[in-house]
Length: 113
Image 1: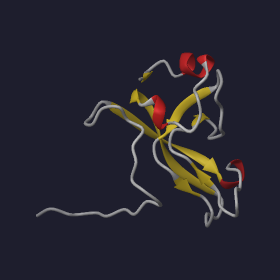
Image 2: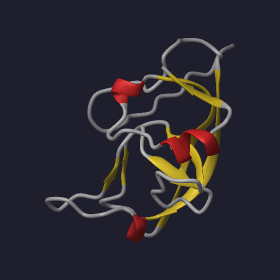
Image 3: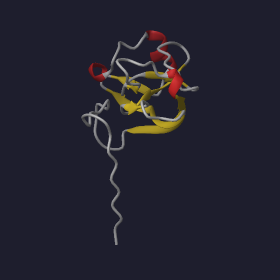
Image 4: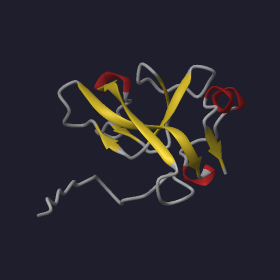
């Protein structure tokens, strides 16, 4: 007997990964709604955003991981656990901004292609 689960994500189902399969590792971190800027009435943390271990956008030497998928905080009541890639191969062109050299050094288990 198999159990099927279904999750619905907002928008299109895009990927930041360069290769399909098990060539990546995610972990969950807590992100506060107040740390996600509001743009035109919505609070969306985009896939590919570089964040630190506290869940705050940090495209610098404090980088911890790359947000795995878009997360809509608009209706959130505060803090959400979100998937962050800490190991794998990431498509540069899928990211919302260019990753700095400092962030790439801090993300030493991620290869940007």
